[in-house]
Amino acid sequence: MSSEAAVAPLLEVVHVQKTYFMEGVVVRALRGVSLKIMPGEFVAIMGASGSGKSTLMNILGCLDRPTKGQYLIEGSDVSGFDKNQLAEVRNRKIGFVFQGFNLLSRTSALENVELPMIYAGVSASERLQRATEALASVGLAGREQHHPNQLSGGQQQRVAIARSLVNRPPLILADEPTGNLDSRSSVEIMGIFQELNRKGITIVLITHEADIAAFAGRQILVRDGLVVSDLHNEHSQNAAAVLAKMPKLVDAEPDDEPSAQETGGRS
Ligand code: ADP
Ligand code: MG
View 1 (spheres, rainbow, N blue to C red):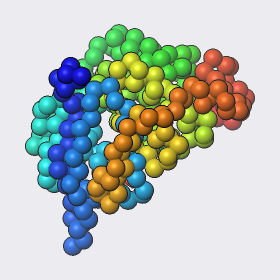
View 2: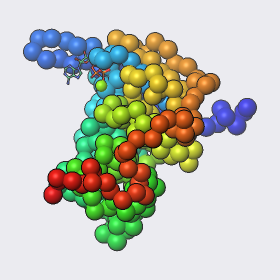
View 3: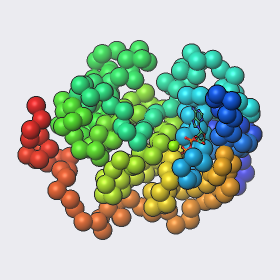
View 4: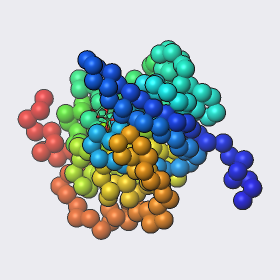
Protein backbone atom coordinates (compact mmCIF):
# COMPACT_ATOMS: atom_id res chain seq x y z
CA MET A 1 0.00 0.00 0.00
CA SER A 2 2.60 2.53 1.05
CA SER A 3 4.99 1.64 -1.78
CA GLU A 4 2.35 2.66 -4.31
CA ALA A 5 2.26 6.18 -2.92
CA ALA A 6 5.97 6.52 -3.63
CA VAL A 7 5.53 6.09 -7.40
CA ALA A 8 5.50 9.45 -9.18
CA PRO A 9 3.05 10.15 -12.01
CA LEU A 10 4.37 9.83 -15.55
CA LEU A 11 2.04 12.62 -16.67
CA GLU A 12 0.34 15.31 -14.66
CA VAL A 13 -2.12 17.80 -16.09
CA VAL A 14 -3.03 20.62 -13.71
CA HIS A 15 -6.00 22.92 -14.43
CA VAL A 16 -5.18 23.01 -18.12
CA GLN A 17 -7.11 25.32 -20.37
CA LYS A 18 -6.76 25.67 -24.12
CA THR A 19 -8.46 28.51 -25.90
CA TYR A 20 -8.33 29.00 -29.64
CA PHE A 21 -8.79 32.53 -30.95
CA MET A 22 -9.65 32.78 -34.57
CA GLU A 23 -11.10 35.73 -36.42
CA GLY A 24 -12.95 37.08 -33.43
CA VAL A 25 -14.25 33.66 -32.40
CA VAL A 26 -13.10 32.25 -29.08
CA VAL A 27 -13.23 28.46 -28.71
CA ARG A 28 -12.61 27.13 -25.23
CA ALA A 29 -11.51 23.64 -26.27
CA LEU A 30 -10.25 22.70 -22.77
CA ARG A 31 -11.77 24.46 -19.79
CA GLY A 32 -9.76 23.24 -16.81
CA VAL A 33 -8.59 19.64 -17.10
CA SER A 34 -6.65 17.96 -14.30
CA LEU A 35 -5.45 14.37 -14.34
CA LYS A 36 -2.56 12.15 -13.35
CA ILE A 37 -1.39 9.14 -15.31
CA MET A 38 0.90 6.67 -13.57
CA PRO A 39 3.67 4.66 -15.26
CA GLY A 40 2.31 1.39 -16.67
CA GLU A 41 -1.29 2.51 -17.06
CA PHE A 42 -3.40 1.89 -20.14
CA VAL A 43 -5.82 4.80 -20.35
CA ALA A 44 -8.58 5.48 -22.84
CA ILE A 45 -9.66 9.09 -23.24
CA MET A 46 -13.17 9.10 -24.61
CA GLY A 47 -15.61 11.72 -25.77
CA ALA A 48 -17.85 12.79 -28.62
CA SER A 49 -16.52 14.65 -31.63
CA GLY A 50 -15.57 18.21 -30.67
CA SER A 51 -15.26 17.43 -26.95
CA GLY A 52 -11.55 18.35 -26.88
CA LYS A 53 -9.82 14.96 -27.18
CA SER A 54 -7.37 15.93 -29.90
CA THR A 55 -6.63 19.21 -28.19
CA LEU A 56 -5.78 17.29 -25.03
CA MET A 57 -3.71 14.79 -27.01
CA ASN A 58 -1.75 17.65 -28.61
CA ILE A 59 -0.90 18.98 -25.17
CA LEU A 60 -0.07 15.55 -23.73
CA GLY A 61 2.11 14.93 -26.78
CA CYS A 62 3.97 18.25 -26.49
CA LEU A 63 2.66 19.20 -29.92
CA ASP A 64 0.97 22.25 -28.44
CA ARG A 65 1.03 24.22 -25.18
CA PRO A 66 -1.79 24.99 -22.77
CA THR A 67 -3.19 28.51 -22.70
CA LYS A 68 -3.30 28.18 -18.90
CA GLY A 69 -2.27 25.55 -16.38
CA GLN A 70 0.65 23.17 -16.04
CA TYR A 71 1.71 19.99 -17.74
CA LEU A 72 4.38 17.85 -16.11
CA ILE A 73 6.16 14.85 -17.61
CA GLU A 74 8.08 12.75 -15.08
CA GLY A 75 7.81 15.68 -12.69
CA SER A 76 9.21 18.35 -14.97
CA ASP A 77 6.92 21.20 -16.02
CA VAL A 78 7.00 21.42 -19.81
CA SER A 79 4.17 23.93 -20.17
CA GLY A 80 6.62 26.80 -20.59
CA PHE A 81 8.95 24.98 -22.97
CA ASP A 82 9.68 26.48 -26.38
CA LYS A 83 9.32 24.59 -29.66
CA ASN A 84 12.80 23.11 -29.62
CA GLN A 85 12.55 21.97 -26.02
CA LEU A 86 9.16 20.39 -26.72
CA ALA A 87 10.57 18.58 -29.76
CA GLU A 88 13.35 17.21 -27.58
CA VAL A 89 10.85 15.90 -25.00
CA ARG A 90 8.72 14.38 -27.77
CA ASN A 91 11.66 12.54 -29.29
CA ARG A 92 12.74 11.04 -26.00
CA LYS A 93 9.50 10.40 -24.18
CA ILE A 94 6.64 9.92 -26.59
CA GLY A 95 5.70 7.60 -29.44
CA PHE A 96 2.78 8.70 -31.61
CA VAL A 97 0.17 6.68 -33.44
CA PHE A 98 -2.48 8.46 -35.52
CA GLN A 99 -5.76 7.52 -37.14
CA GLY A 100 -4.38 8.04 -40.65
CA PHE A 101 -1.11 6.14 -39.96
CA ASN A 102 0.96 9.12 -41.23
CA LEU A 103 3.45 6.95 -43.11
CA LEU A 104 5.56 8.28 -45.96
CA SER A 105 3.99 6.65 -49.01
CA ARG A 106 7.02 6.34 -51.28
CA THR A 107 9.13 4.87 -48.52
CA SER A 108 9.49 1.28 -47.32
CA ALA A 109 8.14 0.07 -44.00
CA LEU A 110 11.72 -0.20 -42.76
CA GLU A 111 12.61 3.37 -43.73
CA ASN A 112 9.40 4.68 -42.17
CA VAL A 113 10.32 3.00 -38.90
CA GLU A 114 13.91 4.29 -39.08
CA LEU A 115 12.82 7.91 -39.45
CA PRO A 116 12.46 8.94 -35.77
CA MET A 117 15.92 7.48 -35.10
CA ILE A 118 17.44 9.69 -37.77
CA TYR A 119 16.12 12.73 -35.85
CA ALA A 120 17.46 11.21 -32.64
CA GLY A 121 20.93 10.74 -34.14
CA VAL A 122 21.08 6.94 -33.94
CA SER A 123 23.78 5.33 -36.12
CA ALA A 124 22.78 3.67 -39.40
CA SER A 125 23.62 0.15 -38.28
CA GLU A 126 21.73 0.51 -35.04
CA ARG A 127 18.79 2.06 -36.89
CA LEU A 128 18.60 -0.97 -39.16
CA GLN A 129 18.75 -3.36 -36.25
CA ARG A 130 16.18 -1.58 -34.10
CA ALA A 131 13.77 -1.00 -37.00
CA THR A 132 13.97 -4.65 -38.05
CA GLU A 133 13.31 -5.76 -34.47
CA ALA A 134 10.43 -3.32 -34.04
CA LEU A 135 8.75 -4.54 -37.23
CA ALA A 136 9.16 -8.14 -36.11
CA SER A 137 7.67 -7.29 -32.71
CA VAL A 138 4.44 -6.14 -34.38
CA GLY A 139 4.28 -9.23 -36.60
CA LEU A 140 5.73 -7.70 -39.76
CA ALA A 141 8.95 -9.66 -40.20
CA GLY A 142 9.41 -10.16 -43.94
CA ARG A 143 7.48 -6.99 -44.83
CA GLU A 144 10.39 -4.57 -44.35
CA GLN A 145 10.58 -3.57 -48.01
CA HIS A 146 6.83 -3.20 -48.56
CA HIS A 147 5.55 0.29 -49.22
CA PRO A 148 2.40 1.48 -47.43
CA ASN A 149 0.21 0.86 -50.51
CA GLN A 150 1.31 -2.78 -50.47
CA LEU A 151 0.07 -3.25 -46.91
CA SER A 152 -3.43 -3.50 -45.47
CA GLY A 153 -4.68 -0.76 -43.14
CA GLY A 154 -4.01 -2.91 -40.10
CA GLN A 155 -0.49 -3.62 -41.31
CA GLN A 156 0.15 0.07 -41.98
CA GLN A 157 -0.94 0.86 -38.45
CA ARG A 158 1.46 -1.81 -37.18
CA VAL A 159 4.27 -0.09 -39.09
CA ALA A 160 3.24 3.14 -37.36
CA ILE A 161 3.33 1.38 -33.98
CA ALA A 162 6.79 0.00 -34.76
CA ARG A 163 7.87 3.53 -35.65
CA SER A 164 6.47 4.83 -32.34
CA LEU A 165 8.59 2.30 -30.43
CA VAL A 166 12.07 2.69 -31.86
CA ASN A 167 13.25 5.52 -29.65
CA ARG A 168 12.05 3.43 -26.68
CA PRO A 169 9.67 6.00 -25.20
CA PRO A 170 7.98 5.33 -21.85
CA LEU A 171 4.70 6.63 -23.34
CA ILE A 172 2.67 5.91 -26.44
CA LEU A 173 -0.05 8.34 -27.42
CA ALA A 174 -2.56 7.10 -29.94
CA ASP A 175 -5.28 9.36 -31.39
CA GLU A 176 -8.17 7.26 -32.79
CA PRO A 177 -5.71 4.57 -33.95
CA THR A 178 -8.49 2.21 -35.06
CA GLY A 179 -10.66 4.89 -36.67
CA ASN A 180 -9.74 3.77 -40.20
CA LEU A 181 -9.70 0.01 -39.56
CA ASP A 182 -12.14 -2.88 -39.87
CA SER A 183 -13.20 -4.51 -36.62
CA ARG A 184 -10.77 -7.43 -36.70
CA SER A 185 -7.76 -5.22 -37.47
CA SER A 186 -8.92 -2.89 -34.70
CA VAL A 187 -8.84 -5.69 -32.13
CA GLU A 188 -5.43 -6.81 -33.44
CA ILE A 189 -4.10 -3.31 -32.91
CA MET A 190 -5.58 -3.24 -29.41
CA GLY A 191 -3.84 -6.58 -28.78
CA ILE A 192 -0.50 -5.03 -29.73
CA PHE A 193 -1.11 -2.12 -27.38
CA GLN A 194 -2.03 -4.54 -24.56
CA GLU A 195 1.18 -6.50 -25.18
CA LEU A 196 3.29 -3.33 -25.11
CA ASN A 197 1.50 -2.26 -21.96
CA ARG A 198 2.33 -5.60 -20.30
CA LYS A 199 5.97 -4.84 -21.10
CA GLY A 200 5.62 -1.64 -19.08
CA ILE A 201 4.90 1.01 -21.70
CA THR A 202 2.24 3.50 -20.67
CA ILE A 203 -0.50 3.80 -23.27
CA VAL A 204 -2.86 6.75 -23.66
CA LEU A 205 -5.43 6.06 -26.31
CA ILE A 206 -7.98 8.50 -27.62
CA THR A 207 -11.19 7.10 -29.00
CA HIS A 208 -14.88 7.84 -29.35
CA GLU A 209 -15.70 4.11 -29.56
CA ALA A 210 -16.76 2.35 -26.36
CA ASP A 211 -15.78 -1.11 -27.64
CA ILE A 212 -12.22 0.14 -28.23
CA ALA A 213 -12.04 1.86 -24.82
CA ALA A 214 -13.13 -1.49 -23.34
CA PHE A 215 -9.55 -2.78 -23.80
CA ALA A 216 -8.10 -0.09 -21.52
CA GLY A 217 -7.68 -0.35 -17.78
CA ARG A 218 -8.96 3.16 -17.13
CA GLN A 219 -11.50 5.28 -18.95
CA ILE A 220 -11.58 9.05 -18.86
CA LEU A 221 -14.59 10.77 -20.38
CA VAL A 222 -14.22 14.30 -21.75
CA ARG A 223 -17.20 16.50 -22.54
CA ASP A 224 -17.17 20.14 -23.63
CA GLY A 225 -13.54 20.54 -22.64
CA LEU A 226 -13.89 19.03 -19.17
CA VAL A 227 -13.25 15.63 -17.62
CA VAL A 228 -16.68 14.39 -16.57
CA SER A 229 -15.71 10.91 -15.39
CA ASP A 230 -12.52 9.00 -14.68
CA LEU A 231 -12.98 5.32 -13.82
CA HIS A 232 -10.99 2.15 -13.36
CA ASN A 233 -12.23 -0.39 -15.93
CA GLU A 234 -12.72 -3.54 -13.86
CA HIS A 235 -13.92 -5.55 -16.82
CA SER A 236 -11.28 -4.65 -19.37
CA GLN A 237 -11.39 -6.91 -22.40
CA ASN A 238 -8.48 -9.10 -23.42
CA ALA A 239 -7.84 -8.50 -27.11
CA ALA A 240 -6.30 -11.93 -27.74
CA ALA A 241 -9.40 -13.61 -26.28
CA VAL A 242 -11.76 -11.39 -28.27
CA LEU A 243 -9.75 -12.06 -31.42
CA ALA A 244 -9.95 -15.83 -30.95
CA LYS A 245 -13.74 -15.57 -31.12
CA MET A 246 -13.84 -13.39 -34.22
CA PRO A 247 -14.23 -14.73 -37.76
CA LYS A 248 -11.00 -14.72 -39.71
CA LEU A 249 -10.91 -12.53 -42.79
CA VAL A 250 -9.05 -13.05 -46.05
CA ASP A 251 -6.71 -10.26 -44.96
CA ALA A 252 -3.26 -11.85 -44.72
CA GLU A 253 -1.62 -12.81 -41.48
CA PRO A 254 1.95 -11.55 -41.16
CA ASP A 255 3.51 -14.93 -41.96
CA ASP A 256 1.43 -15.56 -45.08
CA GLU A 257 2.64 -14.83 -48.54
CA PRO A 258 1.12 -11.57 -49.75
CA SER A 259 -2.08 -12.48 -51.56
CA ALA A 260 -2.78 -11.53 -55.16
CA GLN A 261 -5.37 -9.12 -53.82
CA GLU A 262 -2.78 -7.26 -51.81
CA THR A 263 -0.11 -6.90 -54.45
CA GLY A 264 -2.08 -7.13 -57.68
CA GLY A 265 -2.24 -4.07 -59.87
CA ARG A 266 0.07 -1.97 -57.78
CA SER A 267 3.56 -1.58 -59.05
P1 ADP B 1 -12.19 16.11 -30.65
O1 ADP B 1 -10.83 15.60 -30.97
O2 ADP B 1 -12.76 15.58 -29.39
O3 ADP B 1 -13.14 15.94 -31.81
P2 ADP B 1 -10.96 18.75 -30.76
O4 ADP B 1 -9.98 18.83 -29.68
O5 ADP B 1 -10.45 18.51 -32.14
O6 ADP B 1 -12.11 17.69 -30.39
O7 ADP B 1 -11.79 20.11 -30.79
C1 ADP B 1 -12.35 20.71 -29.63
C2 ADP B 1 -12.94 22.06 -30.01
O8 ADP B 1 -11.90 22.96 -30.36
C3 ADP B 1 -13.88 22.02 -31.21
O9 ADP B 1 -14.91 22.95 -31.00
C4 ADP B 1 -12.99 22.43 -32.36
O10 ADP B 1 -13.74 23.03 -33.38
C5 ADP B 1 -12.04 23.42 -31.70
N1 ADP B 1 -10.71 23.44 -32.31
C6 ADP B 1 -9.84 22.42 -32.37
N2 ADP B 1 -8.69 22.78 -32.95
C7 ADP B 1 -8.83 24.10 -33.26
C8 ADP B 1 -7.98 25.09 -33.88
N3 ADP B 1 -6.73 24.78 -34.29
N4 ADP B 1 -8.46 26.33 -34.03
C9 ADP B 1 -9.70 26.64 -33.61
N5 ADP B 1 -10.55 25.79 -33.02
C10 ADP B 1 -10.13 24.53 -32.85
MG1 MG C 1 -10.10 14.38 -32.57
